[in-house]
Image (tube, rainbow, N blue to C red; front, top):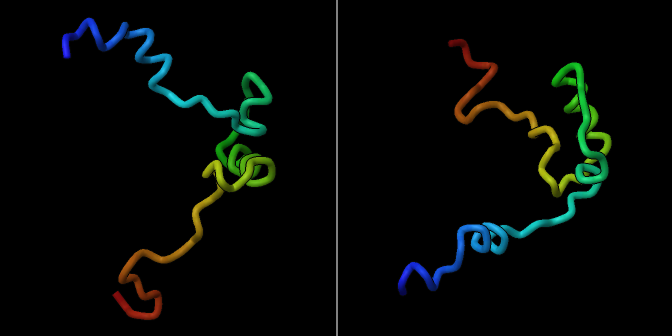
Length: 70
């Protein structure tokens, strides 16, 4: 296909992304936190888990055995 048939860059950008409303995140123009701990606590308390802002489960690294001496 010739390049002219591909559409303008603006059209490709406009139609190339799926914009989706994200509850809570999209409800305020910005937020400020003094520490990363505050931010993480806010995420855990306010954001739905499916957005992926929850803390990762704490699990030891693969092959790590805390009872085995180094």
